[in-house]
Image 1 (cartoon, rainbow, N blue to C red):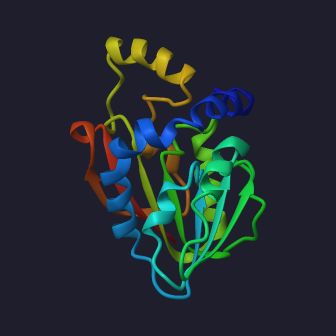
Image 2: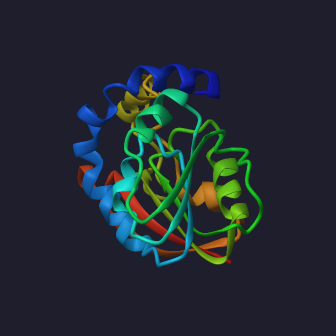
Length: 203
C-alpha cells in the first residue's frame, strides 16, 4: 500500500463506506470513545477521520481537529457538521506527517487507521508527537496476536485486503516499541477479538 493507492481506493469507498461498513464498526468506535473519556474544553485530534463516524461520539465543549488523506472521505465528514457544542476543523493531510504542533492535544483517536497507512510506526510516532505528556491515545483496529505469525490463509486473504486499502497482519507491539507511550488498557472487540480497542498513555 502507498498513499497514491489509498487515495484511489478511498475515493471509491467514500460514497458507500457508511452504508456498507459503519454498522459493522459501530460498537468498536463507541467503545474506543468511551475509553478515551473526553472532557470539557479538551483538544482532541482524530487521525484518519474518514467519513466522520467518530464525530457522533464527541461530547460537548471539546475542540476537535480531524485529518484524512482522502478528500472524498472528508467531503462525507463535512456533511455531518456542525456538531452541537463542538468546534470542529477538518483538513486533508497525511497521518504520517501531521501539519500540527508538538504537544497540542489532550487526546488522540486512531480508529481504523493504523492498519491502513503505509508506515504504521511513523503514524503512531506522529500521533504521540502531537499529544501532550499524559495525553490519552485510543486505537480501534485489527492486529495479529503478539508473538504470532499469520496463517497461510490469512496471508492469502491479506493480498485481497491490501487491494481494498487495509493490512490484516500488523503487530501493535512492533508498531509502538520504543515510542513514548504505555498500554493502559487492551480489550478484544469485533470478529472474535481480531479487532481490539487499546488505550495508550503518552509518557
